[in-house]
Image 1 (cartoon, rainbow, N blue to C red):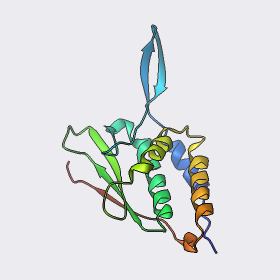
Image 2: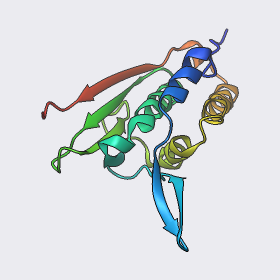
Image 3: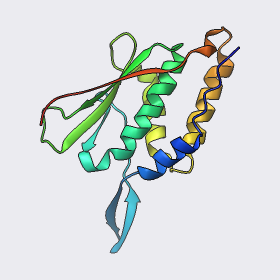
Image 4: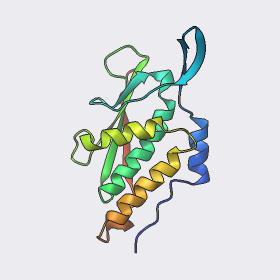
Length: 155
């Protein structure tokens, strides 16, 4: 019997709505307009100004849960870090069960989740979970995700 994980709950929807993607003011051909900030997961995870990372922090939690489920419920780490740069420069990275950075093959998925419109992110994550669940031929589908969160202590 496989456990059914649902990412499309009312609680998840509310959390996504409360933490929308950041926007920035741009000027193109003398026309000013707001555009969504474009996030990219790289070698050091997601990095940026602390005021642009709220939505990313929520979505990284979803991604880490998904990664744990894909690893048969093994623990995944989330490290929130202020790095060695200015205090406003922050980041978040995902650590695999081996203690190493998240497998490179997942970086594109992380970037996709971070940049999805609020109306699409949960159904996208749910569809990825369903794909992993359907691909799993073992009885490991009854595992719950395990995620640990750490942070540095810099003021």
